[in-house]
Image 1 (cartoon, rainbow, N blue to C red):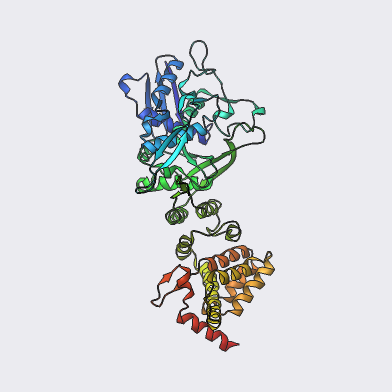
Image 2 (image 1 turned 180 degrees about the vertical axis):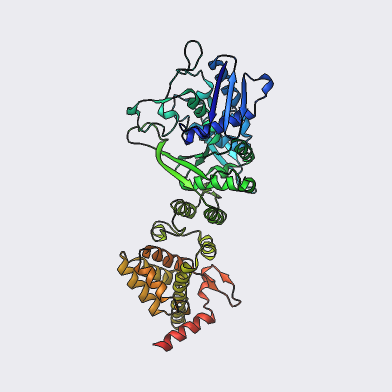
Length: 494
C-alpha cells in the first residue's frame, strides 16, 4: 500500500507546488469514492493519498479522471467552466504548460469559433487549432521504475513549466514524487489571461485553505471570454485578486498574494515564445483593490468592428497603466507625463472620474490650483476669440498649456514653468496653498506634481449655467461667470 501526504505548510514547497496541491484537492473533490483507485483525505492544510495498486496505475488513472479532451478542447470537469471558460482554459494551458510541440498534438488546420462577448454586439471569430492529445493523458515516462513504483527523483523538462528552469544548460529540474504529483495539477489552480501582444500572463495564487479555495474556484466557472483577457501582466494579477475578494465570504481565507509570469521569448531559446520573461509578485490591500475595481468599470473592454466588418475586443490602454502603478506601490496617476506622450487620450471621461474620487487632499489642492489657473487662461482666450470674431479652438489652446508644462525636463525648469503659469493666471484655488505647491515642486516628488498638473489640464471640464459638469469640449468653451470674475480679479491685481 502506498501513502503520500502533500501539505501546504511543507517548507520544501514553492508557490507552484502549493497551488498544485490545491489543484489536486479540486480534482479529487469531483471523484466518486466508490469506484476510485485512490482514497483521498482532504483537510484545510493538506491532501493525503493512499492506494493498493501500483503507483503508476493509480496516478495515470487519476490523470485520466481529471483531464479529458472534448471537441478539441482540454477539459477539467471539476472546474465547472462555462463554454467560453472551457475554451479560454484550454487555450491557456496549451499556450503555457503545453506550449512545446513535444507536449501536445494539434490539428494542422485551425478551426473558426464564434463567440458572443456582449449581448446585442457582433460575434468575435476566434481561430484555434483543436487538441488531439497531450502530456497529461499520455504514459508518464521516466517517472516509475519497472515495477510501477515512483523513482526517488523525477526529471522535469523546463518547457513543461515555464520559468522552472532558467536555462536549459542548467539541466532538467529534479523533483520528488510528492512535488511531481503537485505540479501535474498546477494547471487547475492557475488563471490564464491573453494580453494585447498575443502572449499569455500565467497567474499562480497563494492558497492558504484548501476547503475554502475549492468552493471559491468552482464559483468562478461562469466567467466569459472577456474575463480571460488582460491588457498587461500586472493587471492580470490584480484581476485575480479582485475576483477572489468579490466571491470570498467576509474576506476569510481569500487569496491575498499571487505571482504572475509574463511569458515571451528568451535569447537562449528562440524556438519557444512562452518562456518566463518577468515575474510580478502582487500583494493587494483593500484600498488598492477599490481603486482598481473602479478603474475596471471606468475603462472596460469593448467590441469594435473594423472597416471590413471584422469584430474584435478592444482593451483599454489606460487600465494597464493604472494597474502597473498600483502593483508597484505608486500613485495611480504616476507617469502620466510619459503616458500622455506615448498615447492619445481616448478615455477622458474615465480619467475625470478617477480624479474626482481617488485624489488625496494634498493632491487635490495642487490639482485644483492648476485647473483654476487654466480656467482663467481659457476665459482670456475666449474673450480674445470673440473680439476677433472667431470660435475658440479649445484643442489648440489646451495643447499650448500642456506643452508649456510638458516641455520642461528638469525639476528647476518645471518649477519655473508651473510658478509662471500659476502667477500669470491667478485663481482663488491657489490661495493659501503656496507653501504646499512649493513643497511639491521643490521636493523629491516633483515628478508627481508634473503628472498631476498635466492630468489637471487633460481632464479639465467646463460647467454649464446650472453648475453641472460636462466633459465635452463644446461645453468647456462656455466660460462660467465664476471664471470671468477670477479673470477680472487677476486684471485688477496687475
